[in-house]
Length: 423
Ligand SMILES: *Cc1c(COP(=O)(O)O)cnc(C)c1O
Image (cartoon, rainbow, N blue to C red; front, side, top):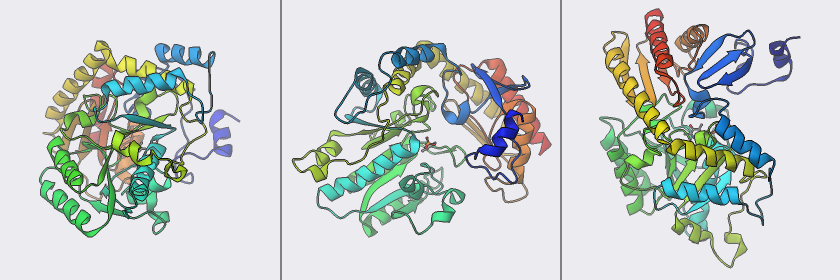
């Protein structure tokens, strides 16, 4: 049996209907923005492997940092113990996070970063003896696949089977152009009607919804409404964090600051699963008490894994280099040029860019579902051409590693243009 046959015998893949999905592609090697499969076919990674990889695959600097840490202190439990890599990650993050963020809590993935934030929002009011149990979230939000994260998510096929089993979430519209007022009013109304503990949002870009974008001024207004009503705000920067929007964090575009921030994905440069939730001093103080019951009884076995921390440190350093900052600007300029060109195409509804994120919506006769027929046609076309893109329904987005060359970018654009002609 070859690799794919053995995979078929033993493995269960994420977001996959195994009865209808085509066989997975066996990747044997990756470098920079490229993958190679077992037949040595080359693929451009146009989506940074689900948005995790800014600095290129098999990055030597991060690999060296990981090796050094693995052979010095690979892991120690974080209950009752600490270590330099964790402290250093906290110190480095404090330098670049919004300056109201004072405490950091480690976990393992984006969903758990969100899970921690939502639990903290609920317990914050419990600890203060105030009954607030409702979480506010955007329509079409995606915050992950664990239960509280799913509850906050608004894309139905991720959560359909579990309706009725969630914590209480009230959904408000995203303040996209022209819908700002509707969104502000819905938030005011929701806070008036319910005992709201927190508002969780993907700042400026809703990734899984198809790179849906809205303006920082609208976000400022929403946070302002929450602050006035003592509702905690949670910025889920799992996708947007670490340069993807053109700044370190999407929240850097806003004037208001959130109470909590969720980080993962690019945190370790796409190498080791790790996540962080960050908090204001006010939140930490609501848990700081002689009463042990007011503590945050949440933790994961691999919390603050030193090897993950070493990868994060190397990644944060890489992000701050002028070379990487220039790369981000270069990709943004390139996207904007392509956007100008493609948005005039008769088969294009709209195109948008923020930082290294680009998305184009293609006209379609049928109501396009997330995993609908146009999506399959597009995906297969891209794979055949050696470009890894995962369209969301009729939306094709590009989110490349920052080290991607201009030549590779042009190949991606050209392939998208061909795809638009083809569908
Ligand atoms: C990917 C993502 C998550 C979930 O992260 P996982 O590591 O897949 O659990 C949460 N929020 C946002 C905005 C994401 O993009």
